[in-house]
Length: 312
Ligand code: CP
Image (cartoon, rainbow, N blue to C red; front, side):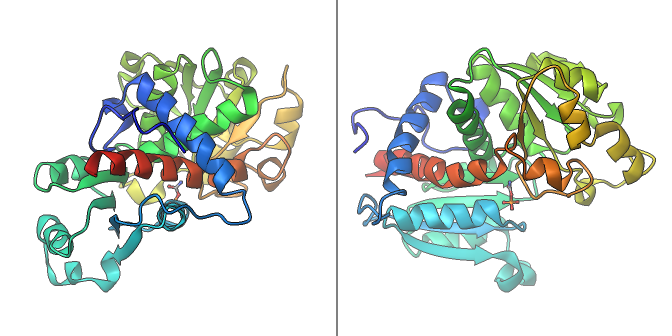
């Protein structure tokens, strides 16, 4: 079992911004243990038999929601699932009222996805339960960044010293911001690449480089993390057409094969096949997209286990 004497520096996982490097090391060591567990014939441990966790999702999700639920069940926690469309939120109930009603059923931990940046921080000021941010608007998606770094470490041996480029819609991406914090904390070099309109002003203040030429960015990096264009968060047009975006910022096999070195391809999902990445690239040996999804369960088991050990 993981060493019970080592603890995270935080009560909630609201963002990578609030973590220290030692927290990430502890989460990865704990995830190594749980990755071994979930590859056994019996994939379940009794660690959290006395813990109840509510997954409350105010935005759609496939990977994050299923992977949290599986992680909780693998740890033997009791699980409540809540999604907005089937709830009394449609009748006007507020976030705080909704969560307080759920908590009065003696819930210990809340995993929340919400369209508003800072929703988790707001909630943490009103309730006692431990909160895990499963994505808050265009702000942070901490468990995604943790599983991304864990997958880089697994493929390349370490994150420190690696060159990572995050490509695409940086402006609307919670994955980009959490990845920047996580990668910098672990000593990676980071660049962002995309149309100028999709790169936030002053992003260099986070210690990242900016490159608008995709070929140059790919020739520089060890790893390219390809992001989806988040049309659902756009109220204006940020580039002339999807066809032009793909020509300038899409990765296909021909481009990959023409680079100076072989690079690793990542994508948080969901993929727009044929837009930011072709199927041939997504399904190639250079892609670790499904390893990211697999590692998501072990990382989420680690985060839940470590936060729960602070409740007990
Ligand atoms: N990567 C990610 O957050 O995917 P979902 O929106 O499907 O959870």
